[in-house]
Length: 331
Image 1 (tube, helix red, strand yellow):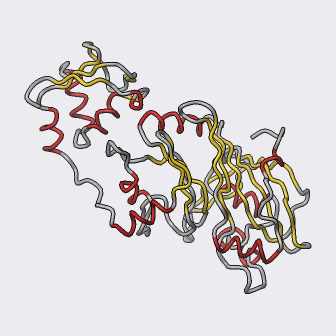
Image 2 (tube, one colour; image 1 turned 30 degrees about the vertical axis):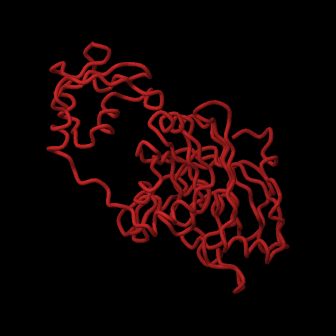
Image 3 (cartoon, rainbow, N blue to C red; image 1 turned 135 degrees about the vertical axis):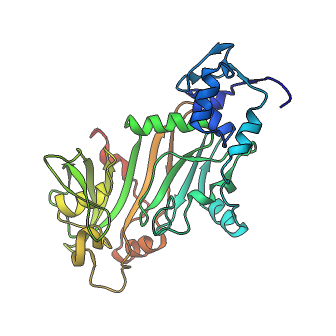
């Protein structure tokens, strides 16, 4: 920039904090540098001084100092590594819904959503391949465990991401999971309300029942079908979103661990037949949520291969719509 620049906030960038808008526009800017520019009045909103926490709205005008791009470039951290052609094709194949605001992927089991200790290949590192026409990278608004498959929602711009995140926090999102459990729950349907807390240990992160200091965790469940007393197909709807909530509720509250869940079910989580894979049988089947542009969006993901094989082995009907099982039951 050769001089002061005036930038109008786009509709899709509205309803977010000014400091976050600046960091997305100029990734090299540190929070400290942003605050200094604001204190000096070099950054203004509609001609007025503002704070970093000020929320900008569509149509407002930002005054940017002439040297902001140079400042950002001088302290810029290295950007994300480029996405390989193979990973770009792979992540594109996961898309099951897309519009101007929302992107929905069908996450396969065994793929981490984000990188971390002991994690290599992860979905977050591939999202640059799904950037929109303006080059904006989609953003995660929730997570799925490593071995859980199914529906994963992302925002395609700052505005939609903020609105989607608010919907998840406000519990106006209805998520339905399908699980194969060892044994048959009694009663066949109900509501689990059991507080959970994270505990440490040599086996890595775990969650356990803790009625005194744990956070409240609520799950609705319904038995869709079963194979004698050997196993059952459950539809589960989490009302809260605690770590490993469905896995612990199935194993501890119901006494029927999810098949393949050795962490919480131990040997009981393995069915004595080679026809059933020893993988976690938990799938985020569908999601129903407020669309950022109005109305509601419902997206469903097909079962992954190992679960589809199990369903066929036990003769379960894949075409059953399980959402009506929760009608009038909240969540």
